Length: 329
Ligand code: ACO
Image (cartoon, rainbow, N blue to C red; front, side):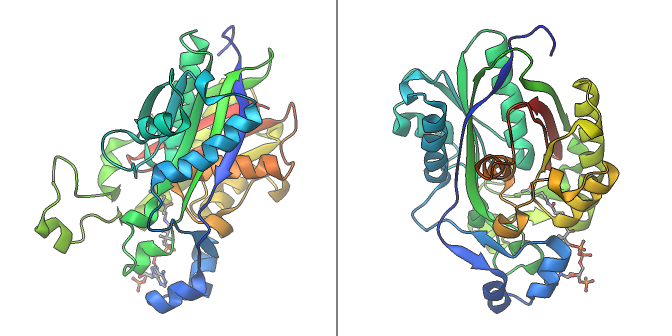
């Protein structure tokens, strides 16, 4: 991305719903236990949206904080991209609902669906718009309400997910800073391993799809695990290569927060000690598109990201997809 207009993060905000669902409560709901969940996933609790909260509500809360921290008014926004697989409605898009609520009158708005990789995909798309001069700024949000598509009678999946939103405002930054590289990828051959079977044009909602529980996440956990371990390593290496960085250059690694064991395998492959890795999966579980921005914003809040730091973010998810980026803060 040499000789292009430098684009980076100029504001951050996050939101998680108040309600916390911990492992002890899950023990009462399905045949599971805290020891299994913690040892296999690292997760201790997750936040769950209130019945009246939809994805745009979570996104809105994160968005106003990000705009505030960027010192930007909603009316000044050029573009809103919401990465989500749990939009309020198929259409209008969650980004359009948000545009109206924020009063971002001149902003173009669209949703982007790349599951847990969605935030990094959205960053890449929005950065391109700014680099080519079409826009000057963008609000990029990862927001998901996975609790709405989770079967709380299925112990294989219900312990893994939570709800939340993380937002950034991106815009021009000083030379030598901002996004240095992106690596996006897809392996459609693995699409069947992680999916929401019904509710689309292939299998519209019907009494049969409801009875067959086809409106809940289906996941082949072991296969997705293997894919995740592989691409976390390869995508990170690719992002570093394109940014002309080495693994030693990484000041903070922000992986998708799905499972502590996947994060640990990446740490091993990249020789990263814990002080160079952001981990909050224990508090929020897997929040899909919100996972990476929630971790990024929390790292900023904790003072773990300083000016000039080299930050690498890498995610993977349904599609199957992956996305990584290296930036200089
Ligand atoms: N409590 C107790 N036992 C359980 C639970 C539970 N909550 N869930 C599964 N088990 C049992 C299984 O039934 C199985 O029993 P069996 O051997 O008698 O059949 C046993 O535990 C072991 O199951 P495994 O699948 O081998 O467990 P594994 O160590 O692979 O961990 C897990 C499962 C946590 C799902 C792991 O495979 C994983 O994290 N996969 C990746 C998931 C992921 O990262 N998804 C990201 C994308 S999500 C998105 O895009 C929306």
